[in-house]
Length: 312
Image 1 (spheres, rainbow, N blue to C red):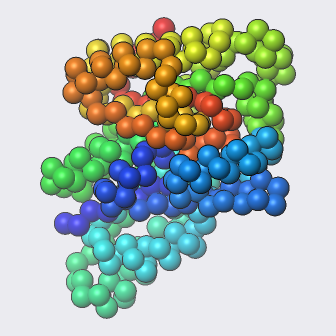
Image 2: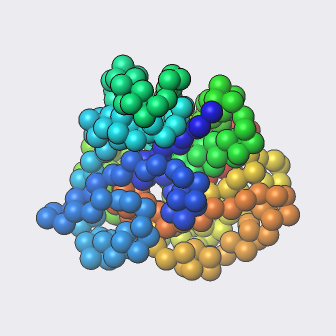
């Protein structure tokens, strides 16, 4: 069975890995004033756009790949190239992408027979849209696992069961660099989770919140004075989780800027060494453009799948 994998461009995985794995991308469009960029996970284009327009990033508008274009992509290409496709989306609670894909799936499954038959395929086509329940680096866990299972020749039902299991057990932790930016962005989106008092005190005292996403829910789990100590605490948490045992041999990192800056943060080397000792593959990438406009340049995120745990 030919199994295809689709993700949206908010998924923080290296573009070269996505291309090598044959993963199909649903792009997100970002507009800041009159400037617009379609996010195709090109790190240099992302960094250039942020450098040129980032001071107004908190007012950016993002547009999810629309349902009609998802339908066209499948009917023109994917129903011919594959027998079963997994569409893995950013958390439904944070974006319209999942609902657009789910809406398109009904039409796709009703209309695939003619183009598939014309291409010489008599067997049925199947599609499963899965809410990753994750954002940023945490969204990368499911595609990596799907590729591993596909390479191991697992069946589509086996892959589906495993991905749905992991979606509820994936975690993202994040440290924003600029709390004022994050507050401005959340206000623009109508999200009051970062209060004026927190933003003001955070700026005055250089307090950085550590934010957490699990099962589609986001919120703070800690706070540390200074970005570098907060990043160190994030890495230390990941080191502990790796030592305790992850549910997949995968750890994802994303950073809202040049990766060399992330690699110079305290305890980054310890984390990489610990992952190497425990057979954990590390994926590093520049954060997606849609991610960067939502949390601000310079943010650090880390994602993995693990048993329930407390952030300490």
